[in-house]
Each structure stands twice: as C-alpha cells, then as structure tokens.
Image 1 (cartoon, each protein chain N blue to C red):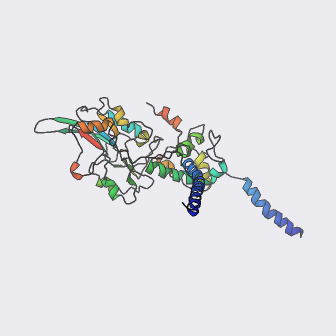
Image 2: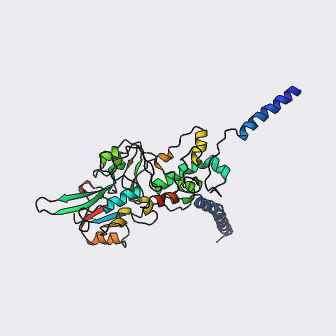
Image 3: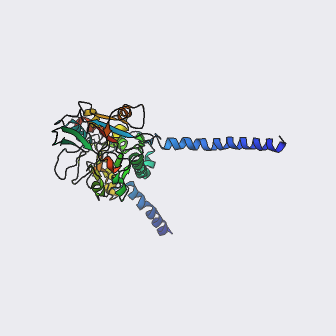
Amino acid sequence: MKLWFAFLLLSFGIPAVWAAGAGAPKPDIGKGGQCVEAPQWMRKNHMHLLKHQRDEVVRKGVRDEKHSLKNCIECHASTKDDSVNARADSFCVACHSYVAMKTDCFECHSGTRKSAWLPRNAK
Amino acid sequence: MNGIDIRRRGFLKTSLGAAAVAIAPGVLLFDLAHGKPEGASGKVRWGMLIDTAQCKTGCNDCVAACHKENGVSGGTGPTDSQWIRKVELKDNGSGRELSLPMMCQHCEHPPCVDVCPTTASFRRADGIVLVDKHRCIGCRYCMMACPYKARSFVHEALQGQNPDAPRGKGTVEACNLCVHRVDQGMQPACAEACPNQAILFGNLNDPESEIAKKVRSVASVQVRADLGLNTGIRYQGL
C-alpha cells in the first residue's frame, strides 16, 4: 500500500515539476501592461485573432487597430531593440522556437515598433 | 373589429417587442466584436486624374515618393520592383513631347483578377486592385495578364519594411493606391509629392468631388480604353 501511494505521489509530482518549467520560454514582453484581451485567453487564441484580422483588413479594408499585428508589436516589441523577432528571447520568437513553429509573418511584415521605425526612416 | 383580431394584434405587438429585445444585444455585440464596422465602401470609386500638361519631363518626385513610402529600392534592373515609372513619349511627326507617370490603372474589370488561380489578386469594394500576399503563390500569371506591365515580382528576401507596407519575397506586388494612407483619409504618396499638382486623387463616384467635376469638364482618356477595362486612372492631354 505504501509503495502504491509513493507511486501515485510520484506520478502526480513529476509532471508538476516539469510544468513548473525547467527550460520554459521566458519571452521579453517589451512594454507589456494591460493587454487588449485577458493574457491567458491571448496565449490560446492570438493566432485566430491575427488570421481573422488579416483577411478583414486586406480584403475588406476593415481596420480594427485594437487587434492588429501593429498594435501587438507596439506594446510587445523589446524595449532594448524595438523588435518582436530580433533575438532568441524576443516576444514572438521565444515561444515559437520552443514549440518548433516557424512564423512566416516577418518575412513580409516589419517586426519593429512603428513609433521606433518612423524616426529612423524619416529622411 | 372582433375580439380575436384585437387579441391577435396584441400578441403580434408583444412578440415584436420581445424579438427586438432579443436581437438588440446581439447586434451590439457584433459591432463591438468587429471594432470599426465600416470597411471599404462599394459606393466609393477611388481614382486619379493625371494632367500631362503639368507633368514635367525629367521630374521623378512621384516615383521617389512612392518608393520611399512603400520601401521599394528604386532600382530599374530586371529583378527590381517598380510600382510606378515615368514614361516619356514623343510624337515623331509633330515633335510633341509628353511625360507621364504610369502605374497600376485600378481597372473596374481587371485582367489580373480574372487569371489569378488563388484569388490573391482582387478588387476591393472601393475600386482599389490589390494583391493579398497571404494567398499569393508567386505564379506571376497576373504580371502576364496586365496590359500596363504594372506588376512586379519580389525576387530577393527583404528586410526593414515599412510597418504600414508589408512586402516579401515570392509574391507579386504593384501600386496599391497607398491603401494604408487612403484608409486614414490621406492622399497617395505620389499625389502629395507632385510639385505641380499634376495628380488629382479622389472619389470618381461622388459628383461633388473635385476629380468628378474635372472629369466631367475636361477631356480625359483611359490608356488602352479599347480593352474596355474602365480604369480608375485617367489622363488629361494624352
């Protein structure tokens, strides 16, 4: 019985230790602050928002600033280099490389905060 | 009027009220979920009237402004993107010379949209012809279909794009009438940059707009009007 109990304890305990996160990503969240939606909801659903948003904007011209990629980048670009994809711990890269997912977004889209990009390219 | 009719009327009134109460919050939530509900309107037709008499030979300001706004390199090599180019014309008989900017003509019936196999090439409700680069597979059928040679293909990986103007390798691109500026109520970069105001931008469908008044009062032509594409870009004095 004791052995059984110890096994039970172990089987619950080990995943809990794993979940607590050796090697879990620690993204640089930039300015952060109050997100447009609840953070837990965003972790799960941000991709749906972005995908819905991109079709609405490009094809219908419905520009919802709140849920736009630009708005994400404005808050979450690193305060050090104004980017969400420049370093291994940048906001987008940190989790996506952890789950081995390639984001193609930034082959076309700028990963730089617009308020930082504008003065650099103002000439 | 008998009793049944009155009861029926009462029943209809209350059920209508109940329906309104049930639907109203749904409509409100729909609006909230979609942010600004107004997108591109089909009542609008964006267009340009280019006055060739005001366009100066050798002046390249519109091209430079476009390239800066959209992050195009400005090169003229075989693999460089060109969203807008200056065309110099000369009539050998009379010696008359003309200079004008040439770009996507934003057709009402665009051949590029007809041939696109993925519906990446499309015409927005307000008449702007665009490439949805999320869907573009880079087949370049549209480049071949366009009678104005308005489209370019991005051959090389790009970096440092304008946050407002995403561009990337493997997709076709062209003048988008500075759609990000138009949606903010601004003019396209070329129209703003022209030192002689040769480019007049506006809503062709609004009879009170400056461009509609001018199109009504002066002679203007569409390039290759014989194709019946009804272009949004018109030229005066061509």
